[in-house]
Image 1 (cartoon, helix red, strand yellow):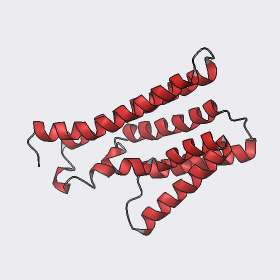
Image 2 (tube, one colour):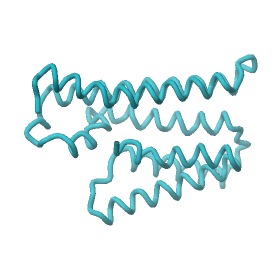
Image 3 (cartoon, helix red, strand yellow):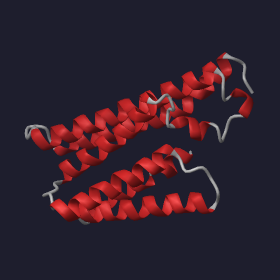
Image 4 (cartoon, one colour):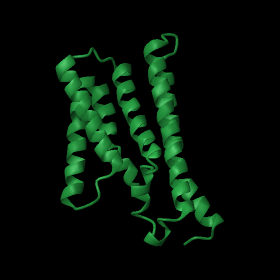
Amino acid sequence: MKILISISPFIVFFALMRLFSPVVGLGGALVTSTLLCLRMWRRQESVKILEIGSLVLFAFLAALTLVAAPAWTVATVRLAVDSGLLAIVLVSLLINRPFTLQYARERVPSEFWDSPVFLAVNRRIALVWAMAFAVLVVADAAAEWVPSIPIHVDVVASIVAFAAAVWFTTWYPERIRRAFALP
């Protein structure tokens, strides 16, 4: 799943943030995002909305950190990153170019690209990702501002939401292919 490669800057961010600090996580994610975009450009692959949005997000947060020196906690920096990720997905939906379209076009024959079903499937998948990222944002906010909620609730909610989005992304297109008897 190329979407998982596209979110590798976020994986790097979360790993480095937990192992070292939020600032190290932002720096690692920015480097990963930059390398991912350069790799795609060098291979003459299309650089996708998610990659460009991630690069802009991590560049902005890293610059903000250098200039304004916010006192990032794990929850606040996760909230900023997850909110940015949610914004990328929502903008793609608002401009009627669900971020999943670019990935789907790499796997689906071009004769289906203009199909209303193809666009509807991608819109639904992007909406599921938006819902998953919204759960992450709510969980991060709760972890920061509702002290009675243990941090493991944030972690479990994030893992379940992410796993559900991954599962739906693989299950739903297959369901539609069978329903419409598509190749």
